[in-house]
Image (tube, rainbow, N blue to C red; front, side, top):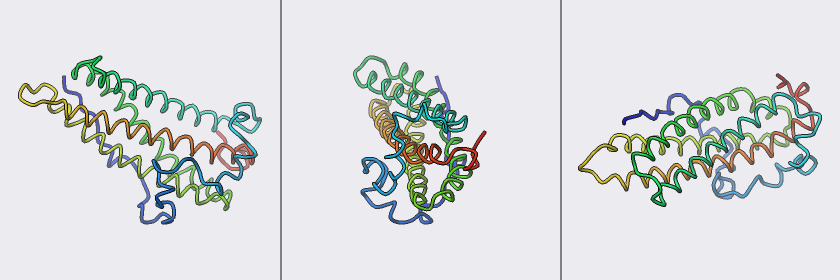
Length: 218
């Protein structure tokens, strides 16, 4: 069974990391190193904590749909994590793992690429302009996209190497499989942390101002 995964490099739009405020690349703020948003970007989160989001009158169709996409990414990511753990525990063969893993990875990468492109090109500029106090937060989120993009590329390279050798009778693919599992785990961990921080920055802004005022209403 040979299934092409995909190449994401030419389909994703990211601003050059050199164009981003250098402070967002500080080790304490880099995705995978930080533990949530810094305090200066949590101004509105204190007023609009997560437990009130779903019932707030300003949570409109745009935010509801956007949050549902994030929930979908989390669901697929956790499924991939589960598949990784099952394979690592010897519950599936390499062929079984690849047949299960490949379409789910392809789905995640494809939808994530489109999602990030829309955020970078449309929503982030609107939100950045809406509140100068939080503008640096969108530099942080765009830099997150760059970090996730790098992790996606590494996962694709590893997955394609696995697909290339999956039927080989002369090559031990266990190392390739383990590398793919490791890289995919890193990608999913980064993605879930990013989704949490992104929501903590954006949803309180929407609840505070409303989708109509911000210009993002569907």
